[in-house]
Length: 293
Image 1 (tube, rainbow, N blue to C red):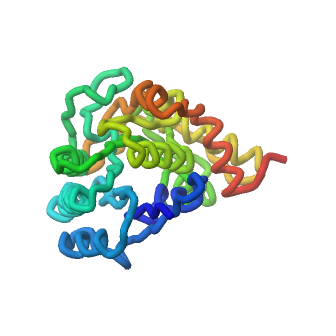
Image 2 (image 1 turned 90 degrees about the vertical axis):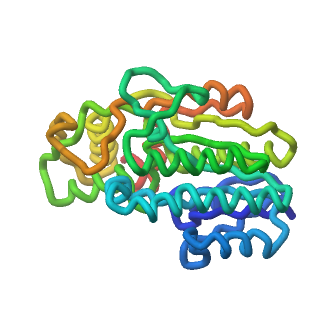
Image 3 (image 1 turned 180 degrees about the vertical axis):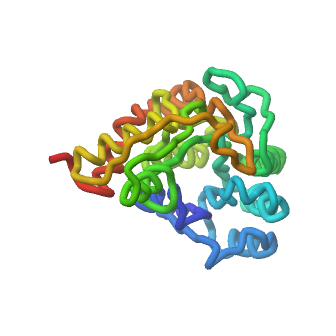
C-alpha cells in the first residue's frame, strides 16, 4: 500500500484529500497540528521517518493573511521552515513532495493570468513566507511539485462562501470588494488535481511548478452575488451585495488586484482541465444547503 503523508489534515484541502478518489493501492495519512507541530522541525523529521511513506503533500500552512503582518516569525516558521524540513525528510527517504502554494507569491498588480514561470513579487508577509516555502522545496534536492492555487472554498472550515452565508443570516446588505479579481477554486477539485500530481511524481514525473484554479474569472462582489443567488435557489440565506473599492475596506495585508492563474501547463501534464468555478460553487452549495428545489 502506498501511503501519502498529508499535513494540514483538518484544513479544506486536507479534508478533501481524504475524501478524494485515489487509485487502488493508495491511502492517505492526514495529520494536523494536534499531531504534528509544524514549527518543530525535529518532530517533522521524526514523523516522516516513522513509517515508509510513498509521498508527502505539504498542505499545512499559516493562512491568517492579515495576522501574518504582525506575526511574521510564526508565518515563516510554518510556511517556509516546515516545508524545508518536510522536503529534507523527503529527500532522505527518496520520496516526492507536493508543496501547496498560492497566487499571493505574485504582486497581482496587472490584469492577466499568471504563468508558473513568471517573476514573483509578493505584496505581504503571507505571500513572502509561502514563496520561502517554495524556494526551500525547490532547492532541497527532493523530487517535488509546487502547486499554486487561489481563492479556495469548500463546505468545510473558514472560507468566503461560508462567511457570506453566515453574514446573510443577520444582514440584508453587504459591502464586498469589487476590484480584486480571480477564480474561486473548490478544494475538492484542487484535491483531485493534487492526487494526479502526487501519483505522477511517484511514477517519475519531473519536478516542476504548476497552477491549479477553477476556470473563469470574477471579483469578490460578483462571487458573493453568485453565492446568494445559488443559496436563494436552495431556500438558503441571501443578501444584497454592494460593490466597494479595496480602499474602502482597508486590511493590514495588501491583496493582489489580479489573482488569476494560468492552468494550461497543468492540463497538458496531468490531463485535467479545471471546470468553471460556477459549477464547483453549485456542488459546495448542494453540500451546505441542499439541492435546488
